[in-house]
Length: 352
Image (cartoon, rainbow, N blue to C red; front, side, top):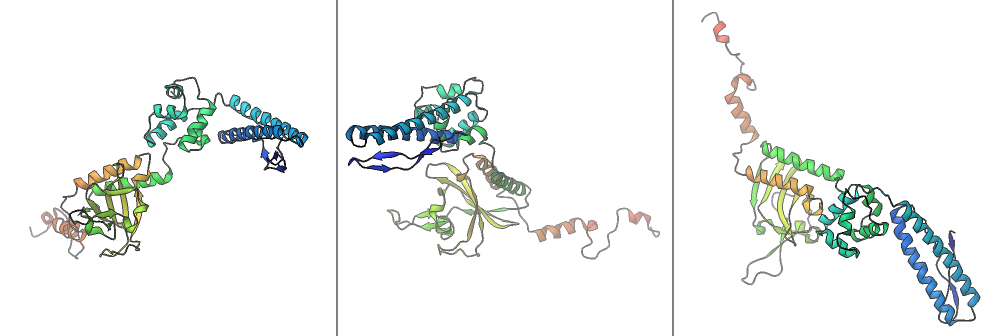
């Protein structure tokens, strides 16, 4: 049965056509959830029509016919649900355990919290999803878990959530290279301090309300837009570096929950920072606050430690390096037109 027209009777006794309600086929866990809701809707419709039948004698034949049709649909929907549940008794659960661990950590929950949300007995989920367990969580429970965490239920079972996306891999590689170049002194980071008033118009804006003692207060608002970041303030000094892609800024920050992280920006403005909040002098390269896996945060921690370690390194310009190298190694250098004299040639000269 594909679809039929449902009839309903209003309290005034009139009959009207309702929307079509189809028997929902089930090919995936997502379909299962839709079918369950469809089953509940059909049950409610039948109860409503049965109530109308008790209140209206004139339309009894049509109401009874409508009830019969929907009861057929209800049975067919129930059959689809039962067949799917039976077919999924031995679904592949190889990703479920690790994905569940990932989702719990991402949301700061314990497995006991999840069991309470699901309304199951303590220890049921933890025992059943154990990799050594021969049992499977019921289809209903799997579907409820996906609804709680708002993830696609088929992805929950078939995709490893802990494998980073290509975009995340690229950003991690970017931070690895920054750390390598920092360790090799290819790039040098400048400590810009943490005085917020020095960066009004680029990273901070002045709050309308000052402190009780008359001091000015500042709000973290890159390019003037505080609502575009999850961070609220600095936890250490700001560092900048000149790189092959231009000037970048690394900011150690925290969010409203006290969680620490970083934001990395590419600065595209001029030397004098503008106080015009409508400018777009910053390009956000990445923010660790948007990576729930914490993989990026770990790489940023490593970079920031390297930046702090090399903060006091003695730095000279590339031109100075070249001059010093030419002076220390004159025989390897013919840049100024001097003849390179090989080692030991004076022993072979005829007038020695």
